[in-house]
Amino acid sequence: MGDMRFPLGVYPVEPMQPVQGYTLTFEPSDGDDDEGDWEEWPDRYVFDAVISAERVEPLCRMLFSLMPGRVYPILDVIGRDAYREIDPFVAYDPIPMDRFLDAVRAFRGFFFEDGMCGFGAMSQEPFFYVFVDEHKIVTVRGQADLKEKIEGVLHAFDLAVCEEPAGADAAVHEHRSVVIAPEDRPELLSFDEIVERLRHDWRLVLNIDPDTNVDDDGRDLGVTGWRCIAVARFAGDEPPRYAEILLRAGSLNDAEDLAQDATDDLIDTLEGPECTEAELVASDRLRPEVFKAMAKEAGAKLKGHMTRVGVVSARFL
Image (cartoon, rainbow, N blue to C red; front, top):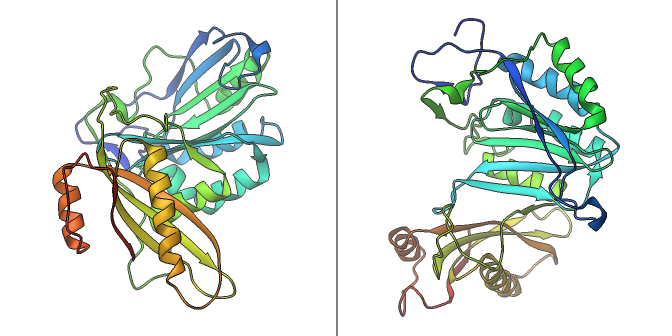
């Protein structure tokens, strides 16, 4: 539309007038930096930039070049959890910048075109944060002495300060995944497999309170049905195997503990190469009617009320 190209995976579905540019605001410190809490950010300037889709990747390359040698990756995924719109993953341990950039290059279509994910990275010394959301709008946060450098990069892309930049999110718009992996092309990674690999390589964890079970509005859900997926890796050339565990639990921690035990029990039934690693790659809550349908498909007989905690079904896929 006009001089603006939208990503393949997120685009307006009504006429609009896109506006490229950025807003600039100031955010005060979140707390006492001396306490050492990495989530308490210092005073910083915030830039929200809208730019044509073909220029998002070059802009990010320039911004990432301002980061130090170790960073904390961030990944947001519009996932399958019935009570949460976005799965927010973060790394609590920094990784080398080259490992982060290797993944960005390997999955560039996923990161810069897919409308179901957002990604970025942050550093502490100096404080610097770059995030590309699911609309491919670029948000930059930087401590005060980085302001001129960030502005220099944005100006190099002919972006100027404006009151209301307008990207896909400024109109009625649609999100979709652009990753296609047909069943007869096993060498291609699916959306879920890319997320799984990023979680492993970037050491990502789900950034929610693992001891509660609430929806996006903060309402306590109590005990819900869960579908957990685990991967078991084996010695030698044996391919990995995936397990599906259906269970009821009242928190993410409880669900993952039950799923891990069930996975270990499944692995004990196998013969052949030794299992070298078993980890959970997905833990999603299900609405009651969906949970019951999946349990029936898995051949499980539901016993007791939905609030009864425990594993309902465990099987290799």
